[in-house]
Amino acid sequence: MRECNRDDYLIGFDLGTSAMKAVLSDADGNIVCKASRLIELQRPEDGRVELDAERYFKDVCSVIGELVSHVNAPSEIKAVCLSGASGNTLLLDEACRPLGNAISWLDTRTAGKEAELWPDVDPERVYRSAGWLFDGTFPLAHLGWLKRREPEAWGRARYFTMLNDYLYHRLCGRLVVDHSKATTFYLQDQEASAWNSDLLAFLGLETDHLSELLPSGSVCGDVTPGAIEATGLAPGTRVVTGSFDHPSAARSTGVFGEGDLLISAGTSWVVFAPIKNRETGLKGRMLVDPFLSPSGCWGSMFALTAVAEKMNVYLENCIASNNGESLFEKFNRLAAKAAPGADGLSIELFKEPYEENKVLVAQAAPVNIARALMEGIVFLTRNRVDHLMRLTGSAAGRIVLTGGPTKSQIWPSILADVLNRPVVIPETGQHAGAMGAVLLAGIGVGTFRDEQDGYLRSKPAERVIEPDPERSELYEGLYREYVDRYGLDG
Image 1 (cartoon, one colour):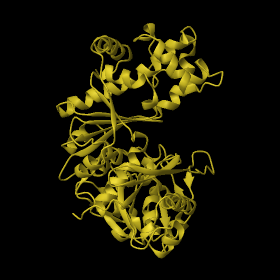
Image 2 (image 1 turned 90 degrees about the vertical axis):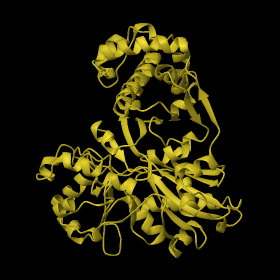
Image 3 (image 1 turned 135 degrees about the horizontal axis):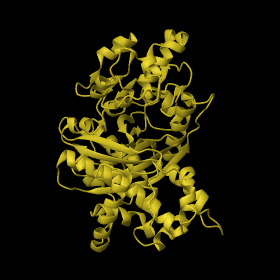
């Protein structure tokens, strides 16, 4: 490994669903600057959600250009890496030009139509191959829909890709996808690290119709003259493959071993957990990511999907903000005033949406509503964590929390008390996905030997929330009551 120059900088992206974030960092993990853009989703018809690929690429270039303006010379930036959400679908012609918009993973035009689109495909076989459960959405469904409903575009297509693949092509001239994001495309055989020939046969495709598969942290080329002009990067800047967003965040926060957990709390609460055996994730019906395999752990994920949206309906109807105080600030202030257990009030957001529960909560004090919402989400998280721990039988490791709730003075404390384990909040948690891409960029250009080396050399400052023994004992009983009340698997 070459000696790291203090003037070497790396750019990491977290390409989210509603926004893209990027950071310019040095090799010690110091963030020099940040940049972001909102992502414009197009909704041409009910259920359809699409992205303009060219507009998206221009936004990526604009973000890079903003970051480049903060260095003395563009040549100081050694690599750019793209991590983030994926699972969208884009058809390209012979010259790699988009044939229409990319179909977002949020698109529901195919929902419930998997039997129609894939009558001869066994969803269980797809799950075991791809590592993600097939529910009639995401690229496997999009491709079936396009072949049947858009035969003209299908016939003109030369390449069948995702938006991230197209971005790599525009940046370095090579159509590639990392094994992590390829999982969301469903056509990859995870264990073989190759495209699934059986599924390709159903679609009538060959491997050369798809992007080239590469491990995360691989150099896929230097920026092209066109990308140099669009971004301000210097010739010779490397473009490096990233990963799916949660595995990327796990890398930058040191969540590497079985027993470690990364809880990413946003619109959905997602728990990412390294597992030694891929079968463990399949047995638990979790989403599986290649992560550090074959030399290290696989990754498993489960989510409380869109739980924040369900919670916000309660907040807007029960404790609406006033006097210039934001809704989130009021929510936290009220929750901190209530005692554990919320005076007997409990809320299970998936079984008790506001419209079905508004008569009951109308009789409750706002402080208890706020507390019950926080506790309910944490109880549901613990329930799924307990299930995972039973599957792995592993010793408890690090718990890292990232996302909006880290700004709360009370929510992380509830999480630590309910799990009865310390909760680590990294200083760079709001940019954990982008910092994971920085780490992968550094691996690609030789700044770091591997993920462990990158994490140790760029480790962010952390604060640790310790559980309170008395509250943990109290919460143990409250959690058991919650499990019994809602018929959860305890």
